[in-house]
Length: 325
Length: 266
Image (cartoon, rainbow over all chains, first blue to last red):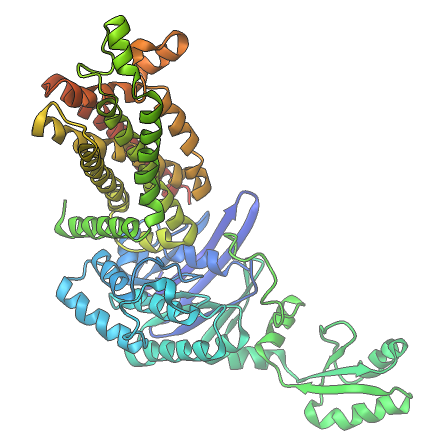
């Protein structure tokens, strides 16, 4: 193995007979934001927990910041910053107290900890709330404090496990800005898990899509979308009984794609230019179209192409943090 | 212990103490309920020592036949037992909330996490003892052993707090459940009542007396009580301190083994 910030080879984690992570390989480059995208229960959090030394792999190996996560776990812990799912922060303590505690646990001298803590609080916009107990913080404030805690020792590698889950759009965008600053401004390598397509698209230079514990696609977002190929045309017909007839017509324009119930989807081989031909063809066989939408490929299309299912709209489903997330 | 390990342990201990202080619902009941119980007991049985002395010429409640002096150590022990569970509950809460994982992903020594948490229990136990001493003194109780005898009480209380806190922490690490730790409350209650805490063993009979006589709490309570009722005695003081000390050592050992096993089995 080389000295990449994060690398994993054949990583497996079983819980009894259930395989949560199934032979995952990773190679994250220095200074990269790497997105780990997948639905709840896909294996994202379990992978992060192995990489952050919280779980022992059942099989395979992984190195973080150049250290083996099992043999050199203590060295890994010194090199990483971790903000786990649900922002686990003691609600009885203040932001300042938690930063001081975290600094001490990271072995930072008191004077350095004070200035670093103040700087971080300012950067995440929590200076005014620094002496308030965390139980009075909003979800967004907790996430920002969580991020500040993960950064107190200026880690080389930062793990963010679903950092914006449950946040309002404004807080989400503010956190994205902070991640961008960390990566572009400070060169921190970031591994980010998310179930939000837009988040992965916005932040990650490269993405791995994980489903059922396996990485099903990996690459730059633009490359992955391009691999899906042609844009998807989604058609709803007015009469339910005409769906089969419409599907037969659409088959002449490209391959059928997964879609929600009542909707027909086809990858348009001729691109957007062939839309008019589709409308004419449907009209020629007497089918009345209720709605028609053309989608250029998104990460959801990439996910659907890889798994046969849609990720969009599934964010609230699933098993939550069951150890297999 | 390296300087940073010491600093980490102190920082975690401070957090533990501050957290307890900021949750009056944790420490107020362990102060109030034993006092309430003492008041009820005193009202119901306050005349018993004098009557036993008058009718039978025996003094199982101490040479001065004062029930308040006898109850003093029982109340203190009761408060410490119940308050000490909080250390385990707090640790289970940390595990449930994920804060424990945050600690484990830092380079902190694993033992520091435990010691920090147990320090809160020990501090609460010692403070409880001092508060009870103050309140019982206000109600006329006296420590026959003077300052030396009185000193035995918070030391024994702190060690008992460590022992119970250690067991509660081991349970927290094993189960990761606040409810499971709090479920130990009735067990502590029974253990306390089947001891010499509220009644002298010489007045008990049958299996109850046999169990109470061999209950480790009885050894500790009798050692503490000797300082209050009869005067300072080094042997009794050692008994008051060594019994909870040994229990604390066992509990902390169990705690460390449980923690190692939990982290290894992940």
